[in-house]
Image (cartoon, rainbow, N blue to C red):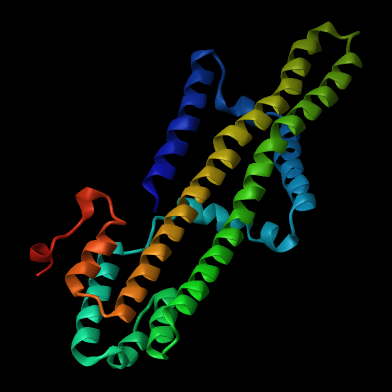
Length: 258
């Protein structure tokens, strides 16, 4: 699980609930008129469906889950795997990596090593792997765009809900005792619109954008590693080159890796 996402949601909604109680309200008031929630969330989803292809919209549950999931990438382990392959390639030749390549779990890395084993030249290997990375990033940006768009639509839909509520308020001017509750219910839609946009949709869009950038960076590291294998570079140079993609505090020296 991605702890920062969980902690962030807990802090954000905790602050809203704490402020609500400090002002003499209670959490039940947020759900007193479900029409406000249905309009802002359902309306934002509907507007997003109009704006984006259906496959991206149907992928929304997976996008939300991805925002909560931690990274499964073992970057340091992958670097060590590439260093071992570099050592083997220098000793036994690049063709000796064929069996090792079939055992690689990462599909992108496996594809790159197999291209090298098959004798594809370095320029083509780089072009193929960079093309795969670019297309992956574009797919990710589709999901990010959907969440960001929903974050943009939600406040406006909240205002629409408030206007609809105020129209009903005008119908009750002859009943002053009901006006306070009716006005409060009308503004609840605006609250849900702003809250869902700024505490759910936009933060999740930002989180997925960051995760996508991290995955692109990981793939760039793998591309450099595969090309280093093909060039027959010294394993120590391979480690240093790939470790540059890591933060300084996570880098491993040759001595530490032994």
